[in-house]
Length: 279
Image 1 (cartoon, one colour):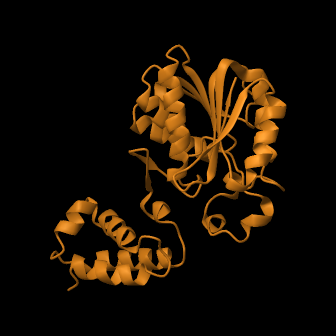
Image 2 (cartoon, helix red, strand yellow; image 1 turned 45 degrees about the vertical axis):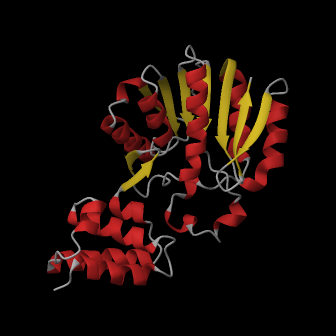
């Protein structure tokens, strides 16, 4: 018989060449299969695994070793302290995007009358749902081209009981939006097409959520052009960008909004990550 502690040690060793945090991934996977919490798994290392559990763990472990993302195996990913349902139809929420949410919450708390926001390219809905969860009187538009992504985003909104304040819209960016927005958030595809083939993320996550065109700015350019007619006075635009796009996005922002204050903010790694445009 194999104990939980023995399996964790073996899995950690097998994942050491492919995972950034092999011990954590092994614990999360084991907790998922056993339908227990990660602290429970750690505290009950002497418990033994059943043969069918070992078979399922082996299949999942091989998938992880082959590069399949852990959140797609578990169907869950934490973002800004909340747990979200994810699938291969949506991009996996990442800690870097929490910077956008922090700036959005700061703006909304400083402007209590600004209560209409949009999350364009909503994917799993992590931005829209998190903002609605923290700002109880906020109304949002959640926009995505993918019907499958909107279905998952709705599930997350229902789970966190914010559905009644989010309007879902399948649309190409803001083409179907006529409202005057106080806050516009977007984590659009921004990876240049030629870079995708060499990226691990592109092997399993939806290309629709990654491919930003020749220079990575196709959708960002279009959205900023559309936003000029949708943004309310004193409104704020927040957009995640690739680090190498710093000069390009600032130039683009200043062309589209010459009278606004445009800036790029760095993430915890010190990399340019977030474009803000305050009108």
